[in-house]
Length: 304
Image (cartoon, one colour):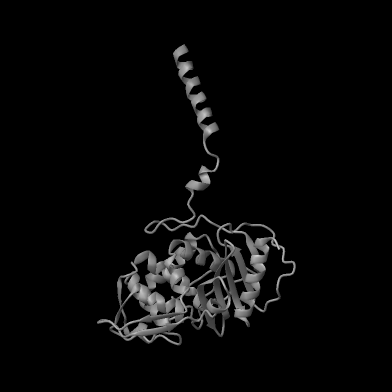
């Protein structure tokens, strides 16, 4: 019996010592914000929930906006960030996520007649061509190509409808609740709702940026020339993100427009060691308001 109590006491003592010396921040280190490719892809990162002071914040026409520090999660600006709104081609950010979760960058994609016929924004793909996933993503980011997005949706899982289901499944895995996708392009369809929110788009965009950083490399380029190959014609692509050349530090990321959604934007910018991710929905002056909100966000981070 004495031997039993001695062993029991030794176990308790060992546990106490182990707990005392266990690094208190290991739990946070072990919980990586981004689950690797091929896994569930669940999101373990959310912006800090706190009151946001908007003293001296710029006036904007945008119905909704949300700017955060991409690393700390500090919320720098918010306006109706959970409002459900059409987001136009920002939908393609989720199209990119699902495509890259199921294909490699150099996989070849056959262009169907349906994909090639997509308008209004397109690369002018030709049915029967074959382009790599990366080449199609060049079109998605620089010219917001609907034909490229459709081609990716058809190819990634071999079934367009299954692809759209996966887009909405990723929404659930990211833990966001104000988004519904009905197609891979962001175009509105009569009698059907398709929407997201500035908050949801910020989380989706951060996921894409952190999980697939080469998307930033692509979206940061003002111009890409894809030379003619044996499987496709040449493509000369110019970016629609004019902040790349007019606001120092802007790295990308995606623009959008439909009459229903107005001007939309996800922007990523870096200054003085801080990276700011911003979302603007339904704006009349997207570029000017993005500049003002980036200025405001970096001043807050600098404590000015």
